[in-house]
Every structure is written in C-alpha cells, then in structure tokens.
Length: 287
Length: 267
Image 1 (tube, rainbow over the protein chains, first blue to last red):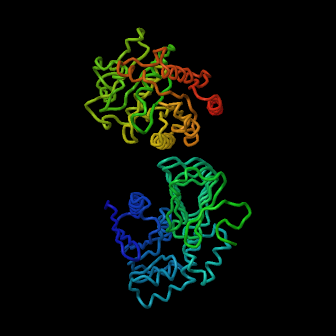
Image 2 (cartoon, each protein chain N blue to C red):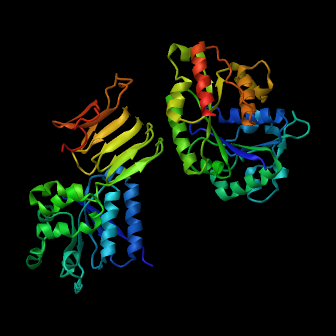
Image 3 (cartoon, rainbow over the protein chains, first blue to last red):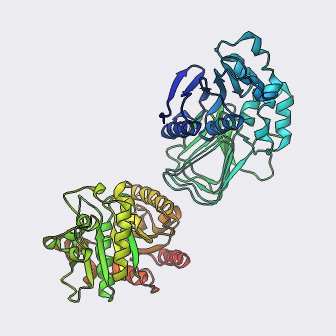
C-alpha cells in the first residue's frame, strides 16, 4: 500500500493541505491526525483549505474531514477536489462535486469568495449563501436550533456564523476530574470542568471555559476566534489566560487572587477579570 | 500474593532511592519478605544506598532477557539472616531500552508470588524507564520535596500514573523543614496537598543523619536516633495498614492539628 502523503503549504489565506489521491482515505485521516497532533497548539485557529486532488469523497468522508480539523482547533474553510465525478448526488453538497477543481465543502460563502482560487465561472453560481450553509446543516441538527436557524436564514448574521456553527460549537464537554500538569483538553465547543486545573495543564476551547474548582493552568477560550468567549472559575489563578487572539498573564506581584469566583472576558479590546456575579447577564453573549 | 509498589517522583534528587531503601528495610524489620527492584538502568544506586554494591553478580537485564532466573540474581541483605530482604540490582552498562514493559510485567508477576512486598525504585523522568517501572506495579508512592518544581513534576507523574491505570497513588513529602514552613519560607503540607490532592502517607523531615546513613549504606530506618528513620518507620507501619498519626515535627500545635486533619480525611 502506498504511504499516505500530505503536503502542507501556507499562504496569507491560511494553510492548504494537499492530500495524496491514491492511498486509503483512512490512512489519510491517520496521517492528518499525526500532523495536527505533532503541531501541538501551534496551529490552533489557523484557516485550512484541503485539496484532495482527483479523489472522490463520499459524504461520510467529507463529514469526517469536517469534524477532524475543528477537533484540533483549526478552522476548515474549504475542500477542493479535481474529481470528474458524474455528480449523481442530489442538491446540497453533492451538487458541488461536479466539474473540474471544485470546492466540495465550504464553511461560508464569503470566505469562499475571498479566496484567490480561480473558479470555473459557470459553476460558481452554485455557491449561494443559503445553499452553502444548508449544506452542512446535518451536523448541527443536535445543537440548539435557535441560534443556528438564525445563522442559516439571516444573511446579516453571517459574519459570525462560521465560528458559531463550526463543529457544533454549542456543544459542551464535561470533565469530571482534575487536570494535572501535562494534560491538555481541546474541544471546539464549551468545556466545563468539575475539578481543578493544575499548573502545566491546558484547556483550549472554541467556546467558553468553566471550571468548578481552582484554575491554575493555561486557558484558551474562543480559540477559534470567538471574542465573546469567557473563562469562569471558582478560583481563577491562571498561569496564562488567552481569549481568542488575546494573551494575558496575572500581574507578577499578585501572589494570591481574591477568594471568590471570577470571570475573564474581552472588554473594549482588553482581557478583563472581574468578580462573577450570579444572576448578572455577565455570562457569555448578552441576551 | 504480594503487593507490587512503584516509588516514583518525576523529578530527580527528591529521595526515591533513599525512600525505597528505607521502606524496604523497614518492612523487612517488621517481618515481611521484601524484594527491592532497581529499574534505574545505567544509573544504578539503590545497591550503593543499601551497601550491597560489591555483591552484584547478575542484574535485572540478565533476568528479563531470560539468561538467569531471578532467584540467582537476587542479593540477600546481610542484616536479615533469614533472607527476608532482597535486592534485584539494575544493570549499569546498559540503558533503559534494555528492558521492555512486558518483561517488567512478567518479572513483577513472578516476584509477587514469592514476596510480600515488591518495591520498584523508578528512575527520574517520564520516558522508557518510567514506563518500565510502572508496567508491573499495582500501587504507587509519589515522593516529593517542598519545592515548586518537585510539586509540578509530581503532579505530572500522578497524571501519568492515572493514565497508566495506577489510581490513588500516595504521597511522601521528603526533606520538610518545619522551621522554614513556620516562617512561611517553605511550602506547607497543606499547600502541597491542595495542589496534588492525594493522600499523604508520610512526611519525612530534613535530617543530616540520612546523609551519613546513605554514605555508609545503612538505611536510616534501622537507626533509632534518626528522626527521618522514625518517619520511615511510621510510613512502613502505615503501608501495612496500621493507623499511625503523623509525627510531631516541632511546629505549632495549630498546624499539627491541621496536618492530622488532612491525613485523617485522606484515609
């Protein structure tokens, strides 16, 4: 069997993964996972295009890729295929399989249009905003419909839609133990930890981070770019606090923080940490 | 069937080997059949601390590679005439890759049939040597000193032990200086338990007699005048299920009570 070959190239538009079109798809997935795992959090938040060459992807395979990248904190912008398939699938993703060099999956239309890739003029009309969002609706059906349905229908909200819809971000991971030094949690949605997060441990979440214990490690909320993300802890003593593209650390002279729960979030372009008040509308996005 | 217990720390120099030697000797003096296994291949020194270096003929690699049976490689400690205390030394001329996890599992399985306690002295670090050392163990003791770096490494090790299926390891705090803790210059037992959140099985005070006993190859646990030896005797008894309060480390009554409370809660 041929070894799964992956070439990664970077440009100002993000990273492009060129995937071998001959080997087994499962080998490719393994190879991608290895690459992403070895890159640690270096690539978190990067925009990714995938070029699968002449390979024809099934819907399950597209879905697999669609989930794979966000699980390592990367933003999948599109999948491009040179496939000459007959495209006998129905509307939605299947329709985009036709013709030469097509994007068979895309996160949002405006991202797609900003791409430098030359597109066949006749085919580009297929990528209308609504259709492109509908095309990945199957994966988000289990998420709360309220926010998603607005994202799918209201074009005005589209600027924020890619991040919210990506990987079903309204989902939450519950961890019922203490994270110790060297342990990392990565999740595209929210992360809730019932326990402490010790120094040397990392929590990287696409959404919010909530710790029902002492947070002493490194937190990265909104790692996929969401400036609305917050970090809340019963005792917030982070080594470092990151929200979206902001990085902060506690002041050097401050040895012990206050003895009450706190919330960290971005206000006026700065990460601020305040006392967490129960019942205030301080949590997450203002309703 | 005996217990296989690994003594580990992550950071080097916190007293794993000294602890292994003292707990092993202490258990033997209580009448148990004990074997100490040094897995620090290439940097062996448990034999030196035990004062048995000049009697090594075969080592752990000879046993795991199947060249000799373990009974041939074991060194019987001269201080216990009935051969209760045994040492399986590490190889000095090889490295950690000379043994693998499956071999360690088999070795521990064999040893526990004959001995009440199999104590494994783990090398520093988290690589192959550590993985070998924990492979056959069913219980773990984590040794730390009251330093931030040692605590950080202990925390990492506890996580790795849990990932390796060794739940609820127990903590030995080594080289505590009560006077410094009292002045606020050293982490207190509470501070450490706060972060590591595991049961404390003993606190060993800083004690100059340890240096002397280590150099002479006479474990301090046999010295009735050594405070560290007393602490190790207490740890030994706790390991066998006895309920022994933490010894008074000459600090204020308030802190001692708190310490005892932590320990009482932990059990």
